Length: 380
Ligand code: MUC
Ligand code: MG
Image 1: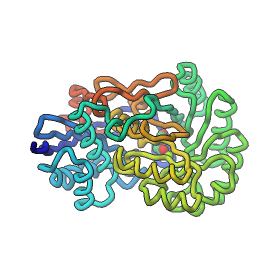
Image 2 (image 1 turned 90 degrees about the horizontal axis):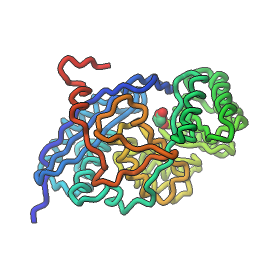
Image 3 (image 1 turned 30 degrees about the vertical axis):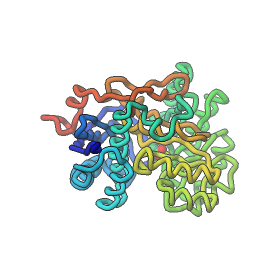
């Protein structure tokens, strides 16, 4: 029997409003731009994928516009006519036509696996060997920029039993202000919630050391990427110096990064993301390296919408150890979504859908409304 072939790959950008401003060290988000990819095969099966980053080009090396261009101009032509059931062979072809561009590749890899899982009638996690959990603990990020509002938001989410771990985005304001902000939130929530901070590379080592000492004393549970991603030796020194765990995020994307960081004792915890690694299968390769080294795993996000979030959830659900849970809350930050049924969050967890593939269906009306190339659309 002839294998089904890839017939077409189409991408579009949707700009979705967020429920509130989301402040990070490098940008303030009021909307999120998702690149949605549709892959059609000649047996009638379709797969979907998502390529997402944060704040245009302010967070990483790729942008929504650049990801769309990379897929349309280089990746799609290399894949048309190829065996739709052989994801590894397809992704290997992409390595030849384009280096890096892992966020864009993540959308392609996701769509190929989604199509194959739908073809076989199984959830995506089953293709990766099977899920060992059907619920993923998921934290929420407090990033309104206002301490009182953040406390109010956390109290509401605790009462709703939606989240009991909160990550605070810092690094934007002077360190003393950030430390005071975090300390007030931790004091208000006490032992009822875990509080972590993400500095998004904003500090230097000399400033980071006293700041982390104060955050540790305030009861903060985890410090994420305090230094620029290139400064691995510095991150290792901080990890050795403090009891509070230090997590690598921007510094760690590939299995090679994971090997290097693990061998120099560069971090206690690793934030893994499908977008950083190049897809839900690619992220598992990185995960297994850190896991073998005894570095704890955290399922991260680049604030994907439902498609990317569920792709990540299927991958993380297969990991034997996921000590720090996940931050797969991206869909909850969006005022409007582009799927028919939004992912389910309850009892502090994201639930893994049980339908074939990703377990999600695009809402064509919403896509038609939010797509950037819509007639008269106002790009935010
Ligand atoms: C990051 O650096 O971890 C994840 C949650 C959030 O609010 O921002 C992201 C990116
Ligand atoms: Mg981070």
